Length: 466
Image (cartoon, rainbow, N blue to C red; front, side, top):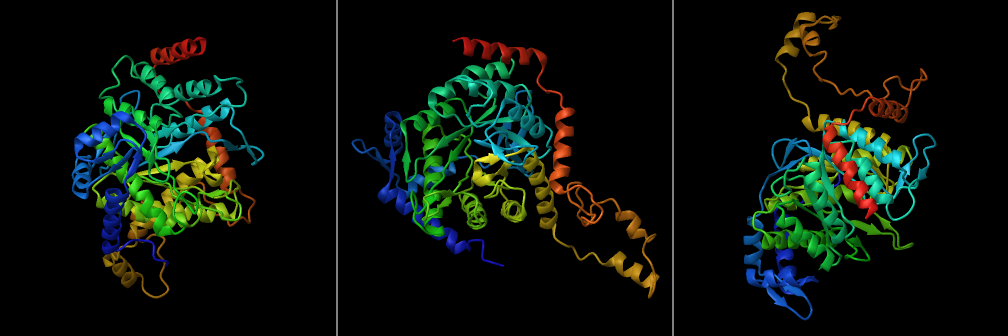
């Protein structure tokens, strides 16, 4: 098998190179208050350029303040631990392109897509958190289109909310909305939201994202970095060079988070990709991801941080051999990495497409990855006894071990997989996923209490009127 993990010596080499980069080259921060806080913490700050350089000893000290695990919550009080023994998933419910349920062709999202996909994500046991892209829907015109999508989304689920706000100004809406979702409880201490903070590659934090970071820390909200360097354009054109830059960007933001508020939850995750040097297109889900997934989690764990990794995903939005091969390979790599959170359930089409069917197919791939991760144990006592008892020409239909293990998951089985070999005209995996999605949507009942639902509707009426 291709080498896909770093040796301990290589992990240490990446850490040393990261420390050298952040100490000697530094990071540009376009946010005055954060520059002042960094200087107070002991960083070397050049006010004119906004360049922040972190001595290696200070970097290590700051990273040690980040918690190894933390809790997140949903609007109804459900709680999950990130970094504990249980591993969870993050689902997405909309993207710039939706693979149409009937035609299988990509189109832009409508309001029904948001509702449908949120209802599916709500009923997936592995999913602890959901993100909704700040993106308009085709059947609502004007500047309030994405607001209508958000309202529809919030009425359908009580999972933890990943907020990927397009600006600090839009995040302020979440601050006003949070007490409505919690039934009047304050946002501080609720852990209702995880806040995405983007890095502008290479090595730059903008004014808007600096404001997002400070606001999130001010409310004790977990911070997740959006770090997406592209090999060949915004990062070096090697797998190792892009990984080094991504690690430096994630680690610097982790340190800055601790400068803003010591002990604030922070999730180590990155999304490196490569540039197609013939067209300039960003190729987000290529096989390079398998190598980056496992290596990134190794680095995150070496820093003692809770980790996340993209799980499924495919380059194409078609349901074909390529999407199956890429998706299962990516899921296997993600599960084998040991990451605490598997992110992006439903994503396909080079990370700008998704579908309800793909949410369920990737959940099936997750089940397969878990099964393969358990491996094979050499528990031979009963097997040897059965073979000796039955002997040559015997049968094992009524063997005690057969009866004891028949329904215990000894062998892999999943309702979306086709075990009829295609000979009997049974439904394909995609057809099975479509039927399951339809059933989940039809049987869904919102878990949000009616008074909170009314509060959500009232909030959006006022926002739209304003």
